[in-house]
Amino acid sequence: MYSKYLVAAAGLLVVPPSGVAAQQAEQVDERETGAQSVADETPPESVPLADDGSDDHVSVSFGASVVSQYISRGVAFAEPVSYQPYVTVSVALPELTGGAITDASVFVGNWNSMQSGSPGLGQPANGSLPGWYEADLYVGGAIEIADRVAVSATYYRYFSPAGSFAEYNDFDLTISYDDSGLWGSAAQERGFSIQPALRMVQEAGQPNRPDALYVQPSIAPSVRFGPQDGGVTVSVPMAIGLSDSFYSGVNGDRPTFGFFRVGAGLAANPFGGPASNIRLNAGVDYWMLNDDVANGLDDTEWVARIGFSTGF
Image (tube, rainbow, N blue to C red; front, side, top):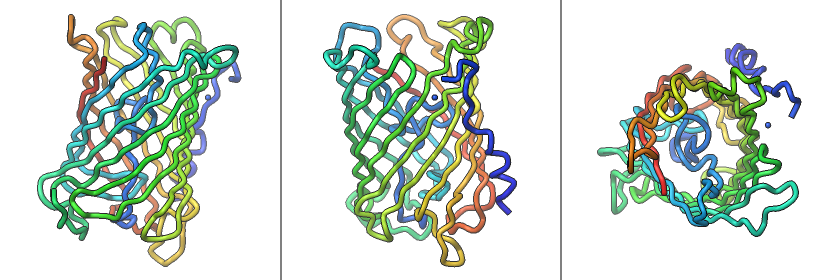
């Protein structure tokens, strides 16, 4: 049944004209984030480089999202509305730049998912903080090559203060390409870009099954309407979820294809003065799921989200 989703996703990665970018519910996952898109904003999937154009080497970014349902990698993790705050501290390393390396940083952070009451899906919530489904710690480093290619490597440790799942680890390698400015002057004036990315995650110490390799190619086409300082950015993020053994089949097998997701989002910096770096965002994601996977979901799902991000 899901073959139509594979056909729809076949053209997901686009090269710009220049030619150059519970599972079962107890299996906790990373958040879908960061520099991706407003409709897919769930750090720390992609942690931005620390260099923000200022002379400060240390920067702090933080924010939060409210989502109608917690789905990640095409698997349901919590049924109720969830509140998902995060914070990341980055340190720029200009001494490592030179030649092809145009930026470098290290970072550490925390991401959380909380809800009122039980997470549902038959999961326990008998820990010390029953509503705190997930608390993740992460640390890593990132480099930028030729002002275009960003490579980040991140270690994640997943915890559940609610006692809903056992602790385990992920090692994440994400490669993204900044294609802004490569589509002609008219597109550049509107801030148009596609932002192709490839994410690869290797589990370690997964308590419920053999450690899996997860692969997610994605794009996030976006365009700005209005002035650069006060306009609204519209994005249409798309992603495919693939794995060797992350997805448990309803017939006992291990399907490779997990989902195809497409979304729509809005983002803007509506405030002036000291609050000008507060960015508001809202969006909706449409998940097209493999019905051969035991994911706790229907064949298709809608997830709405709203949130903010800022930093200093």
